Image (cartoon, rainbow, N blue to C red; front, side, top):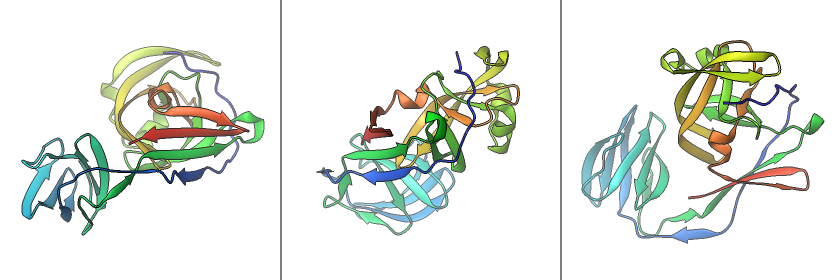
Length: 219
């Protein structure tokens, strides 16, 4: 893995946009009755189901993730985020494309808010970084079990550093969420800001429009 040089960071503001185009598809009737870490109680077509993460109901509803605030389910390849007492059915219409707009900041850098496993972070967009990258102090604050990661080395402006490679279960930038994203934890104090590298960026469509970086992802 090669990390780009570590750049100074200024404060930026990201504006989020949701495209107006929508796509409808056939869904079972789903309502959320209970939310817990790693499992959810759903009523699907009138039948109550207790689903654990990774399990699929007889109706074809798979639970991707769940905590006390929301659950992510997958139906026919489409992922939906549901809150407690929320109900969806075949009349539900989902946004076809999610979009995040990130204005260029001072020095020509792009910075955007997001979260890792539900913990808020600020990312520095870095197309020269192979993966999401952070220092070990940042990883500790996020509660990541990185010391069991795969050992490696990376080249930075400060020289060659030791790294540990892990997989992040959930990474969110604006309205875009990806699961199972590769990351590198640097055993040192750099980078000073978490780098949003290509393990995330290559899984979305990225363009630049008049000084604004645009990330798009089709559901």
